[in-house]
Amino acid sequence: MLIPFLLVLVGLAGLLWSADRFVGAAAATALRAGVSTLLVGMTVVSIGTSAPEIVVSIMAAIDGTPDIAVGNALGSNIANIGLVLGVTALVVPVPVPFSLVRRELPLLLGATGLAGYALANGHLDRLDGVLLLLLLAFSLWWLVRADTPDAQADDAIPGMPLGQALLWLAITLAIMLASSRALVWGASELARGLGISELVIGLTVVAIGTSLPELAACIASALKRQHGLVIGNVLGSNLFNMLAVVPIPALLAPGASDPAASARDYPVMLALTLALGALLLWQRRGRVGRLAGGAFLATYLLYLGWLGLAGSAP
Image (tube, rainbow, N blue to C red; front, side, top):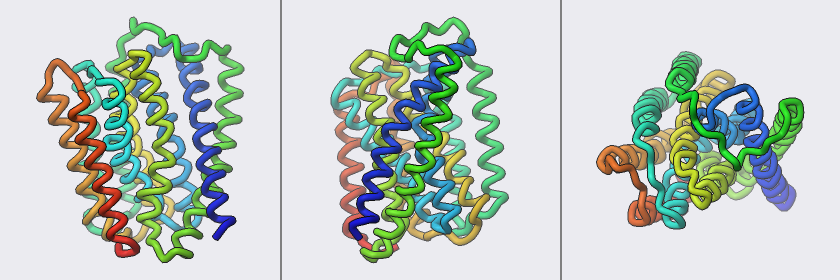
């Protein structure tokens, strides 16, 4: 039990370190290619902070533990709204540009609905994965098409040359692969040894660990008054979790999924997503304040308590 636990810790540390530098290198690459900072925040940074979930999902599917991949995607989305946005709003209330809501919120709601349909029958097949990837391709096209070319550069993005940025991309991706491999193996062994379902491990240890890059990025962005990056990162990360993480077990390891994913965890994720959407649409001036942040965080803590009471029950 000690070795799997140590591998989980090493894997999480490696993911956090490599994801942070991957985001910086990816953002610098995008800027050198002439892409606006706003698009970087909504796509490159979101994909970068979702990269740990994507890589963990690939490794989990390859290892024959697809429930960790599904639990990681659902748990990360729950953590992004309840933990990441909740804590960030408690630290610094987050003004929200309505243009971001208009652009990303419908895509996120559509992706959440399609993923829910795929999980509803308790069986993920390759058609589900293909449909989700098609919506991912459309979402990327739509975000690029709606880009504002005169967006201002973000001083927080490192000003490294293109060659250096590409080198860092390759190095951090390799570290991310190795770290996720260690994390998935350690989490699987812990699940078997403690009698806890792999879904619950994916929803808690793995999901929180892979959501820490979003938490760090959002708090830092809020403190630097880069508020568009905060909500763009949360919405974008959740979008890519649904459209790039969930399809992986469907394509690589199609088969039955843990019924708790659709009966317990997906409704929690859907409720938080709808609550966030309603809040952003209702407050047209665009603001996630401390009251809303506290409510999101309290919901997340209650959800963790529910998982704890559920124990090994699916």
